[in-house]
Structures are given as C-alpha cells and as structure tokens.
Length: 159
Image (cartoon, rainbow, N blue to C red; front, side, top):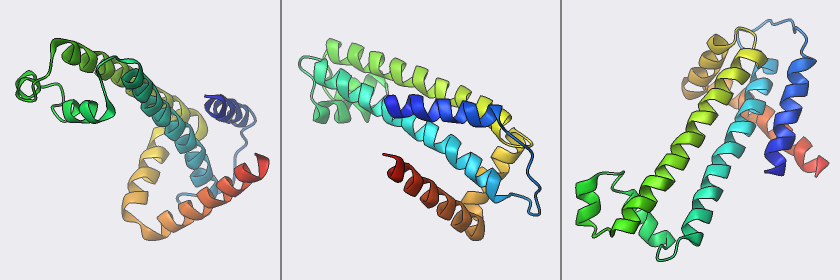
C-alpha cells in the first residue's frame, strides 16, 4: 500500500510539473516512460486486489485457497456452484469477493482514464496507440521494455 501511495504521489507531481517534449517519432520514449509509470500504478492496484482477496479467504472460516479456486471457476453461475456442492455461505462469500474485486477493477479503469488524459499528450488517443502498438510492434515493445527496465533499476537503487 505504501508503494502504491508513493507511486501515485510521484505521478501527480510529475503531471503537475509536466512540460512539452519535442517528438520526432509518433510514439516518443517520453510517452513510453509515462505509460510505464501508469502501468506501475495499475500493477500495484491489481496486486492490492489479489492481496485483499487472499486476506478475505484467510479470514473466512471454512474457506481455503483451493476451495476458492474451485468455486471461482464457476464465475458466479448458480448451476455450476451447485454442481460443485457449494454451501450457502460459500455462495455468499463468492458474491462478496466478486463485488469487492469488481469495485476495485472499476477504480483501476477510472485511474487509467484520468492518468492517460493527464499524463500523455493526446490523452486516450496516445494511450490506445501505445497499448495496441505494444501488442503488435516488436520494435516499440523492445523500446518499452528497455525503458521499463531502466525504471526498475532506478527504483531498486532508491530502495
């Protein structure tokens, strides 16, 4: 949680001090760096969902990680849960966990939307270009991975 707070504050400070950068490429290295910062925040938020889910499982009497995985395969389908022999408390627990996860996933989507708009020149348009480019353009992906690795090295040096 502390790391997430640190990253979020760093992002906000970066956005506040943001200056225009000359771009000779369609997607600049600066755009990729900003995108990587955003993805660090998103990854931290996703990890938090996993941590909260694990805590909920640990704190639920009669629930184990193995049983949770079995029940989660049903994806909330009542008939599938019944086939798995889910007890009423297990069904309610799964509903509670799913609700918590969905709320947090929605928050991630909102954060991405705000950060993409504020951090990237061109906002959502640049975000979508980078996201789709990373899936299809090997040279862009290589540049991104290099930037991401440099950021990790700096982060490890600060720890």
